Image (cartoon, rainbow, N blue to C red; front, top):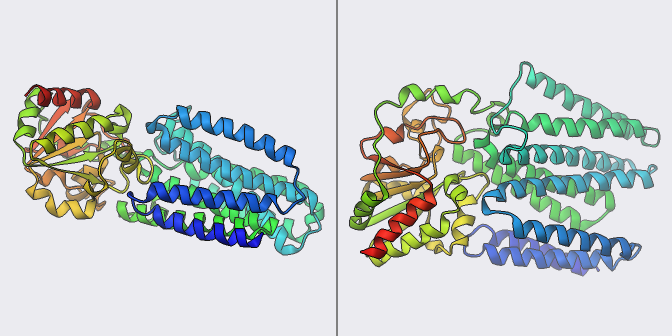
Length: 453
C-alpha cells in the first residue's frame, strides 16, 4: 500500500500549495482531504487493526465534527482552529503513551520519539485549550498574564522536561513514573507558554500551536514507523513555522518578543496621552452622501465585522457602489482578526471577488488617491501610532495607512480601544469621522439609502 501513501503525500503538497491563494484555497482543501482519505485507507488495509473500534471512532467523531461545524459561527472560527490544534496534540500524546505500554523494550530511537510525542503533544493540548479560552473569553481574560520570575519558572519547567527525557531514555523499562512526570510538565508548560500572550498576538500563537501539532504528529509517525504520518506532520509543522514567521514580520516583531513580552499588559495608557482632540461622528444617512459621491472606496475589515456578522451586508453595499461606477477594493492586513486569513475567510463566505482583495503592501501606495476608506471594526491594524508614537507598543508595526485617504469613516460601537488595549489616534484625525453603532445595522441603513435613491 506504499503507493497509496506516495499519492497521498503528493496530494498533500499540492493541496498545501493551493491554500496559498484565496481563489484556489477551496480546491486545496478538497485535494488535501482526498489525500487524507487515501492515507487512511492505506493504513487500514495494512491489517492488524480492530475495525470495530475504528468504525465506532469514525461514527462518534463524524457526529461531533458535523454538529460542531454546523453550529459554529464565523466569529468562532479562531477558537475552533485553536481547539482542533489541541485535539491533534492530545491524539499524538495518547498514541505515544499507548506505544510505551506495548513496547517498553523498543530501540532508543523509538523511546526518544515516544517522549517527544508525549512532550510536544501535551504542550500543544493545554496551550491550545488556553488559547481557546482566551479567544472565547471563557473563564480567562484575553489580556496577557505576567508575574514576577515568570521566565525563570518557564526555564525551570523546560529544563525539568529535558532532564526527565534523558532519564526516561536511559531506563525506559523502569521509568513509567518519569513519563507521567514528563506528561504533567508538558501540560503545565503549555499553560505557562500561552498565559503571557495577549489577544492581539493570537494569530501568531494559532500558527505556532498548529506547527506544534504537526511536529507532535511527525514524532508519532516515527513511533509507529508510519511514513505517511511523518510526511503529513512535517508539512503541517513546517507550514506552521513559516506562517508564524510571516505573522511576526507583519507585526514587525520577533517570535521571542511575541512569546515573552506580554504585549498589551499595560498598553492602554501609553498611547492615550498621544490621542488628542475631539472625535467627530455622523449618522449613516450623512455618510451615504459621501459614499454616493466617491469614485473610489476601500473597505478595511476587522474583527468587529466578524462580531457583527456584517460581511454579507458589506458585499451588498459594494454591489450598490459598483453600480454607481465606484471602484471598490478590500484592504487586508495579515493579522486582522484572530487567526491568519480571518478576513479572507469572512469575505469569501460573502462571495467577494478574490481580485478585489488587496494586501497591505499593495494598497498603501494607493491610499492617497482613495476618496473614502471605510474601516469596519478594525482598530490596531489601522492605528497610526505605529508610525507616529515611539512610546506605543506597536511602534514600527506595518499598518494599513487609511489616514492617508481623503476621508475615513470608522464603524465602531464606541470609542473603546481594540483587543490589544491600545488607544487609536486615528479617531481624532481631521479627515476621520466615526459612525457609532452595530456595523451590520449601520451598513444596512446605508444600503437602504442607496435602494431609496
